[in-house]
Length: 117
Image 1: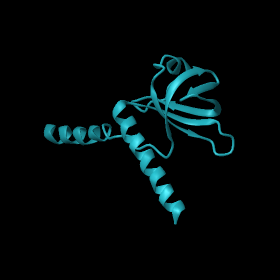
Image 2: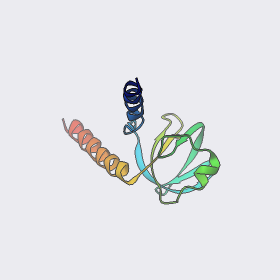
Image 3: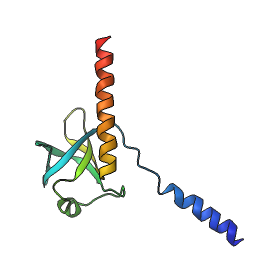
Image 4: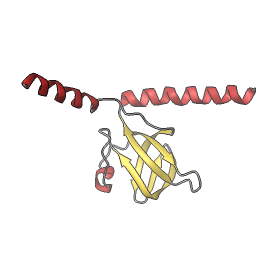
């Protein structure tokens, strides 16, 4: 019985260590946060009313926690299509930043190929 319980707990906990799958977006460096504005890689964005900022552990960050982030933190972000306001932000670690930068380059290359046809 104990072995079965152990295997069940092991199976459930392994799902929590899976890598995050981030939707389409852009990679940037957080330079400044002065509510309701964010400065990402030199460009100032307004925060949308429903903005969600998620930390490295994929937990929601409150404004006080966002203000404590290092100013060179890498973030993956999405903007609202109609307003251009920041809609979702994910703080990413160095490994995720490398993968996301590579993903951006591949997407740009694919768009260039599609446009040349």
